[in-house]
Amino acid sequence: MKRFLRQILPAALCLSALGGCMKWDYGRTEDFSATERGLFIVNEGMFQYGNATLSYYDPETKTVENEVFHRANAFKLGDVAQSMTLHNGVGWIAVNNSHVVFAVDPDTFREVGRITNLTSPRYIHFVSDEKAYVTQIWDNRIFIVNPKRYEITGYIECPDMTAESGSTEQMVQYGKYVFVNCWSYQNRILKIDTETDQVVDELKIGIQPTSLVMDKYNKMWTITDGGYEGSPYGHEAPSLYCIDAETFKVEKQFKFKFGDWPSEVQLNGTKDKIYWLNNDVWCMDVTADRVPVKPFLEYNNTLYYGLTVNPVNGDVYVADAIDYVQNGVVLRYSAEGELLDTFTVGIIPGAFCWR
Image 1 (spheres, rainbow, N blue to C red):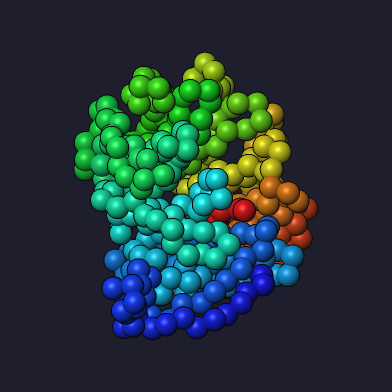
Image 2: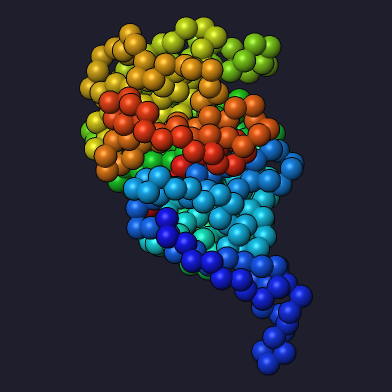
């Protein structure tokens, strides 16, 4: 990534000619100019340590810049960064334990706005340029926001969910309906009418669906982790589900072994191959009737935590959280499984965002 550094005025300086302090004057900042095609890595950081960070990787030059949000804005990203989404040339970063979604310029990494007073934001989905949904954990509501004004405009009440057990996660859209998986202590996919902002249907599946994607055939894919031993909400063998968006019915269910802990369903750029984590990295065609016998990438003393696929060339990126304390590593593989690069990022790399 081409980066142009320039030291800006320190925080204490006020511009008397303007009658006040500069908005972003918290310290020294750096100027960036990001490449047109690159990968954002969202590093969660440790819970309650406030050390979440944002990294940026240039696949062409194999260079990475770490802590770009902090360096560009002169203040830290916050506590537990969860996800990042690009919409209309703006990057939206949900930082759940800081109760905020930041809007950033993807070229300069500078903040351009923020949505505050959220409970614990997880993901943002844009219904239109003036309406978006923000899912939450520890809340039985999905927040409705106006991204142009950075304001909360309403709420979607999720039925049969309390604030203590509330958990809504990733979203996909089919026509006027948005579907959302309910993860922590839940077992449902909710269907929301975007014209009324109401939950109009639900589909019960296995315990704790962890992610949700939509393939080229308008089939939704989610994977359940099955809960854990001793959980008051149950413990069962996890499964991979294929759900038809039109009928909102399960078409396929692939059961895993009891004690497996699958997660992170992802698609390639043409949306005809599905990838997921289950100790190893697995891959299969979305039309397959059975899961493969051998993994795409075998376990190699790694703690696979995040996963993405380059939508252009099919390269597979896997995040290794190592021990959840030290800086993590991202491993880049070709579509054929050849290791192409390894680079260090921040603590607990958990999410990716392509530009």
